[in-house]
Length: 298
Image (cartoon, rainbow, N blue to C red):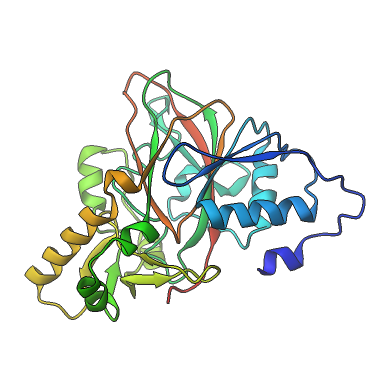
């Protein structure tokens, strides 16, 4: 991976003593004892990179880092993507999207309904996200969990006949697929300017993508952004997508993350989809998200 080759010299950086432990779930691992506020040795970075590929979701506990440090760590995996919702950028850090239900002076400070539907981040871009990092800033006393579903396992569980059918199919992804629906529920979600609309023109990707680093196949459709199967009649496309949406998020393939203070959750958007389980309106929630650019799916 290029990020490994491009890492800065670390001859004087000590190796940290940390553990990577599997979570009691079908996938995922927690990272204990690592301090991202300290310079990261190339060997430690390589170990994290390998764990990210193996486990799809890493929970890095007790990370008391600044937004600038989150940006710097994220950038070691690749270029960062700036979200189309620029209204919710963190001041001074355009790479950081504020995910929050908090209002100040009657105005939302962040994207409050992020993750309302199952999705893979930025699948509506020509180069969808490699991975996302979400850093807890303020957590609710109840609610606020994040769910993940393993799309490699979902694909592998499909009948062989369906796998064969999907092998050459492509699907359209659009940021606008459910935007009006979300705006109806949350009127403060802003209307998009023409420049923003131009940023998120629909794209077409394989229904089954191959992970560029592991070679594993995964479903690559989601209820949030996938609009249609290219080349199929409308009713047939809808029926097939509904079947795949249901198959992709079966409970057996899911991990539920219950947030702890200062958690950073780093997930692989090429391997999983995710969903925000919801936070009561009476509770405050704020997290900072960085998003790493990936490759064109194949």
